[in-house]
Structure formats: C-alpha cells, structure tokens
Length: 307
Image (cartoon, rainbow, N blue to C red):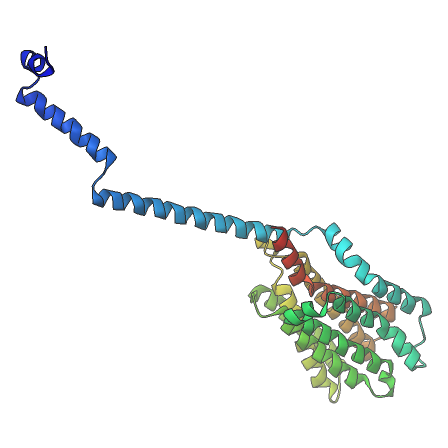
C-alpha cells in the first residue's frame, strides 16, 4: 500500500495534520536560514562580543605591563645598575678618607670633591648616547650634574667670595632637576607639605640673614622646594602609582634639602656639629639617587620587551 493510501486511511492528510507539517517545515527553514534582520542582529552581537573581548585583552596587557614596571625587584636594580656605580662609591670613599682641610682650598681638593659627581656623569653616559638622546629627562639630570660639579668647585673657595657663584650653579641645577621630574601629577598635598617646610626653614634663617642674602636665600629655598615638590609628587604610595626610580628621586630630593639646610644653618646661624660630614654624606647620596631616577625609562623599555 502506498504512503498516500495509508495517510488517507489514517486521516494524516486532513487539514489539521497538513498545517502541523507546514509549521514544522517553516521552523526547520528558519533555523537553517534565519531572516535577514535576525542574521544582521546576530552578526552585530558577535562583532560586539569580539570587540569587547579585544578591549579586555588590551586592558589586561596594559595592567600586566604596569605591574611589571612597578614591581621591579631591588635585586634586579642592584645587578643592573650596581656595577656602573662602583666608580662613584670608590671616589666617595676617597673623598672621606683623604678628608682634605677646607682651610686651604686648591685645585686638587676641588678635583677630589667633584670626582664622585664626575663618576655620576659616567654612570649616565654608560647607558649610551642613544638613551640620552631619546629621553630628555636623562639629559636634564646630566646637565644638572654638570652644574653641580661647577657649584662644588666654587664652594671650595667660598671664603674667597665665591659662595654666591656656587649658589647660582646649584639654583640652575634645581631648575633642571625640576624640569626632569615633570609637572604631572600635580599632587597638591605634597606641594602644601613642601611649602610649609620651606616657609619654616626661611623663617628660622631670616633673623640671621643680611644684605643680598635676604632675598638670595629666599629664591634658592623656593627653587629647591619646587624641585622637592616635583620629586615627591610622582610618589603616590596610596594608589600604588610609583616605581623604584620615583622613590629614588623623592629620597634624593629630600636628602638634597637636608644637605643645603645644614649648609645654611652652619654658615648663617650657628656651627653644626660634624656639619661637613652631614653635608657631604647627604649630598652625595642625593645626587646618586637622582641620577638613578634617570634610568627609569630604560627599565620600562626592558620590561615591555619581556612582556
């Protein structure tokens, strides 16, 4: 018996069953080839999901890169930068071992005093001229070290009337360092702290100042305070937005301020016990830390290559 006879006998060709068959066929056709509007909607959703996944991937890669830069191990820093600083440490030891008297200034004593700063020049130059050419902050710090050496030489003969010359050289140094540290982030809180410290320092010194030093010291305190603010502004410990080099710059600026304040108190106010040792130890440490802060961009490039 044929299919049609069986279907007729069983009543499967009635309008009711025919309508069911047509509905099932339409559903199968819809699944295989959905309407144009729904196909467009499906493609749009798929593309949106792909873009969203791409954005998430980029964010994860960026965060990974940032974490690598922020979490540079101190051991890695010592291994990479330590050998380049060996001449600096040796020349600093030579200065403290010889401990030449300041009462009889000479070109030899000036050379011994400036030798650690010369070694910091070599430290930055050891990273390559291409590195210095590509990063303006490193060039500015190198220029600041050059003016610092000139300031050291002038201060050897400060009793012969060259104190103001040394003051001018270090004022230029602080301007260069401030420019190297940059103006972002602003960090108003750090600015208020530095302003308060600078104001108190000048108020303590003011009764002992006379003549041109009344305003020269005020300008110098403003410049070194501004440098300290720019160095501290980058150190945002609360938000973990810092690297070891930002910490280095901050500590270097603070030590520089301690060194110069000791010079001012010892010269204008009263003799500070062991002033020379305090001044030179904090000064050399400050210059080393600031020089170290210049190599942050190179460490960033190395970290990105590893990622």
